[in-house]
Structures are given as structure tokens and as C-alpha cells.
Image 1 (tube, rainbow, N blue to C red):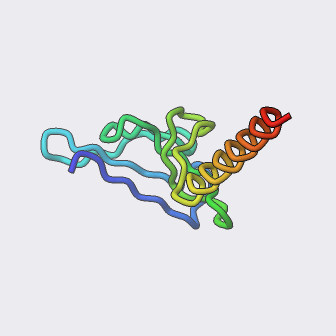
Image 2 (cartoon, one colour):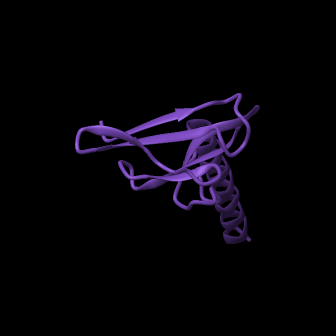
Length: 100
């Protein structure tokens, strides 16, 4: 294990996320600024952000501000369904214009 992450869901914002790095066999606590820190193992960022009805969870993001979150399974499913509906609508439009 190279990183240990602890999330205190009931903690005050700015104190909920704690991370330790393994350095020379010891776990050394990392200084976490705000509610975001790099995840060295996954080459991403750990951020505190909402998920569904939950106001705060640990999420993976490609940026430290958490603007580009990795989607949850539910978010990915909804996005895929929306893209499918858009594609089907576009196909129907093209078929309708072709038959005129």
C-alpha cells in the first residue's frame, strides 16, 4: 500500500479528507489543502463532492478543483442513454429528410 485515504463524512469541510503516504516503510500524513489532494496511485485527484442524494463523498477527478469528475456507474449510464437517444433522434431526422 502506497497511500491510505480516510474520509470523515461528519467532519467540518476542509478537515474531512486525510491521506498518508508510505515513505521508507512508514505512513506519513500528507498536508491536504481544502478538500482535494492528488491520488498518486491513480494519477488523478481525490476531491470531496456530492453523489446523488449524498452531499459529500470522495470522488476521483482529473483536476484538483473537481470540475472534471470521473463518472459514477449511474452517471455514466445516464450519459450513455442520453447519447443513444440523441443518436436515434438524429437517425430518424436523416431518414425522414432522405425520404422526402
